[in-house]
Length: 363
Ligand SMILES: Nc1ncnc2c1ncn2[C@@H]1O[C@H](COP(=O)(O)OP(=O)(O)O)[C@@H](O)[C@H]1O
Ligand SMILES: [Mg+2]
Image (tube, rainbow, N blue to C red; front, side):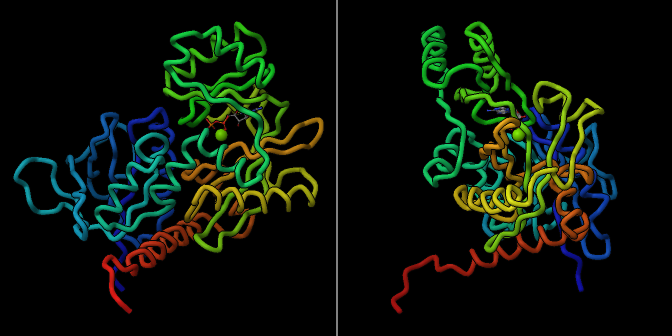
């Protein structure tokens, strides 16, 4: 049987560019060369695509010919970016995007792929956009009666006009301490905890460097507990994992630098709580239009065991030691089989959608 031609897209113009390289490297190493012909495509910091030389794994610095994917239905070739060049440098059957954050995980890329009618791994335009935006996500989760921490959102102009008023509004409505976050972000970049008015003002300024919409949320003494999901409809939940850090919270350093951060699989929680979180994770995924995969993160109060959905990540960290693959490994699905399944799910989603009518026909 002919090999499936998989485009592995990594990098991107977000603060998570480097993280994406590590994820893509692990995926490249684990994709079965008997089944797949892999084309590695790097997105540089300016958002331009480069087709890596054959057999070169995802790595930095970026090399290779600049290419573009035409947003033309059925044209699945990567064309040279140079004007006038017409012959594709590679043909793809499916794209596996492992571009975290803005431009990759938020629906932009998925829109391009829909226009090209190219199958891809993971959530579609709407699901990606919803899961990326922490504020819209919270509204939808709240509307679906799922537990979320109280929050307010702040827009940049309001903050620029009267920062002191925003500080008062946040302290009055939410109460200190709080977490302050850019609404669209990841890897904890731009996030801080504030315990007093001065700290809150500084935290708002910091978050405003990364987004024009900011979330202020009640802070709890939190344990970070996570569930991996796999499937379109129906979707399955993995066993539950927990992250332990010695830092104040699970910040950028704890995620990528600190050697003492521990992944506990399974999480040391009761069977009852674990079942509850797995069911909630599926509800959260469905409320946010997820497809294929997601990692649903909860915060669990250390003192009371009260739990809240923190966020749903449509493209979680994907190195072979990241939480998402580890959870599936421990649930009985090894990393290479997980990749096979994700590719199958992407093809299945595409088949289902391309079978839909695009013209009115009287029946
Ligand atoms: N309301 C909160 N209370 C306590 N800890 C929080 C709260 N919000 C976030 N955190 C901590 O900050 C970390 C990063 O926040 P998160 O919203 O997950 O952002 P990111 O998308 O960057 O991962 C969480 O994993 C958790 O450790
Ligand atoms: Mg997080």
